[in-house]
Image 1: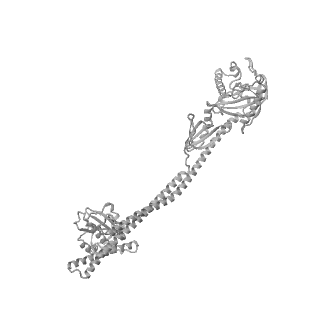
Image 2: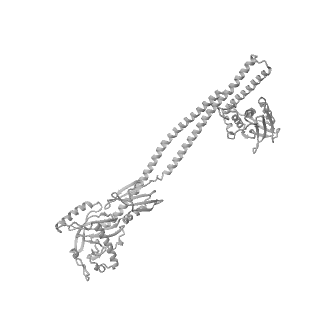
Image 3: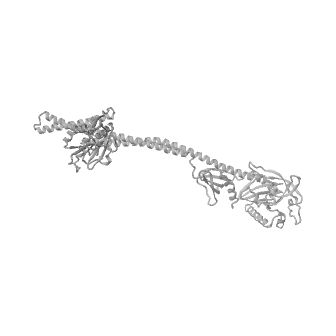
Length: 639
């Protein structure tokens, strides 16, 4: 027993080590597959991310381009505006009569200026630092309603706008001109110098300084244009040429933009331009551009002047493009989200920049397919690893069972052979004079030889079934004949263990029913079932151990035509429900290898199951109270 225990323990240790090696190998295999897969997935997602980045950047650049285009169209119209449009009255040439006549400027109606978002009004500052606006004529207030042809309420409204523009110009130093002693020579030289500097500083590609012919009342040219009450004529006019610089831009700290140009006439500088509200201007220029931009996530656009954030637009993504625009003007700071694009606008707004950013770039349209493929591939790898692990552990357990089987067979052979050899030598040498002892020794040798014969037959039968080398010799056998076969094959085993057998035939006509079996295979099934029943019915811990009886018989199969059930029932402790199916596995034995006391090899019931299947039948276990019943279902035919 010490040898058996040692071998079983060795097998357990080998099984544990083999399981560890299997887990390590499978882990290495899985890692070898998953690492390249991870690198590939990372590369694919990075590629998708780059594609989405460039798509977002392309959309952002489109916004910048359209913003520049919008501003360019607005400024182009203003660049082409004549010098005289900045006065309430202007001289024009009649296209039919080719004569000069006085008309009103197109700028006298602020509501008609639709191309400039946030528009407040135009202004002009002449060489003498005098402010004027096309909103009202450059005359005394008491002549306003008569000369401008407007009600006083409208004049008052325009005076307020004009006052607001003038106050902004003063606040931002547009009306402060340098004072010089010589109003003719030195002023002209300074203006000429400023002209060259301003041209160099403000010139840009789209618009160069231009020269145009303009007209002005001679009286106004002399600074004396103050018509009398009865005056209905503007007098004569004078023609002159002016040189007009491109527009420049300036921002005030209180949220206004000044677009202005310098006009040169005989070295005298005039400043003409218009004022817009910063908030309305930026919203009017930028917000409409995002309706056609398709962003899958929210995008933030910050309008910056240097390092200062002037305005922030949050474009809320929708299914078919931007569904909403949120405008922020307070507590603005640099956005820390992922930067998409950064670009300065074209002149004259070159000091303004647009910065685009988003919290998360989408993974791209192909990411869903890649996610699915990765999940499927990972699932396949996981299932494959699991199958390999199960197959490996099954082989390890099979190897352990085979080792236990070899140990059990060795023990089952060695112990009775040693006893047989010892009793044979004693009988041969005449050492046993008592006739009862000699009979007991002969019986021992006979029974042990018969048991060894059954063991060897089981092993040989199992090997033949495993190789599919034995064909069943199926023949018709009556129930009575099979009962006689059971008695003849089990009588010795029953008498040795002092067991009795109770034969029963229930619901079957013994003389008119034939069972289709291979007699040798059926005999081996019976011997193994009886041996197993006797072995596990004599447990010392079983309170029913005194019932040394087996019930054997035939009965019809429930719900199966042309089938009968051959059963053997013992009155032992029965079989635990958790082991009901395992006991038919090859090499399986109940209990622990280190503490097992019952002899056996673990192939008897497995052989019963294989032989039953070979005869087109099946075997099952039914727990009774007390005992267990093994049922073999076999095909049968009535006469």
